[in-house]
Length: 263
Image 1 (cartoon, rainbow, N blue to C red):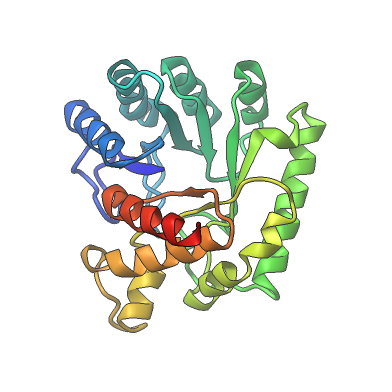
Image 2: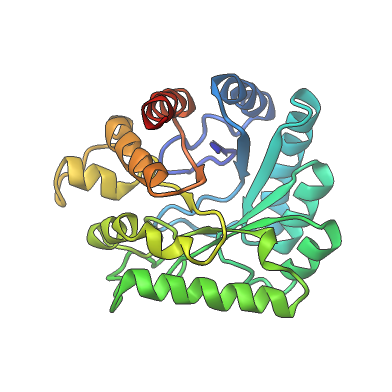
């Protein structure tokens, strides 16, 4: 899953693809590099990010989705959003998947997914982007996220959305410390027992920078490639089905050799 942020303020590449023509060019490039999915996001969810209203987010996302759908027929396009209005407009424009960072907390989201017959990613986040990294606390982070997924899947089923419509994302970096993120990666097998595909997004995350640098002086996003590749290869080896990445070509190459070695 190639990341395409059409925002001015995303933590790693904010502003690079906020013009539709630049966004479409990057989507075409990622497809050539090996992306099977393009994830279009119009609202930054980096720690401390300010919210964006639905109209502005839709204005950023829908034209880009439509342009990619025309340029890359058959490509799976997802919309990275928490808002049902944005999800609906993205699906109308040609998206086929909703990457819901708040896991159906918008009360209108189940209806949108049901009306379009669309699958969705359910992501775990403690708190919201403005305050999620202010002292996040868990008793057992893996067990609590697993219980969250069970509750969300039951919530969806009660609204007419069967389990087979969903992918699960434990939300690395969303209300988690470095140790929480590492524990999640070590405990991925626990989520596999829920019987749904697992998505992992470690790409250029702060915890990668802190592990490779230090808590006080993490490496900047531009120097986190090797750590991102290591985390994603670890996740793939433990059954993750979708890797959400900035560096599509490098990840695809690493996975290609890993598959050959794994037989």
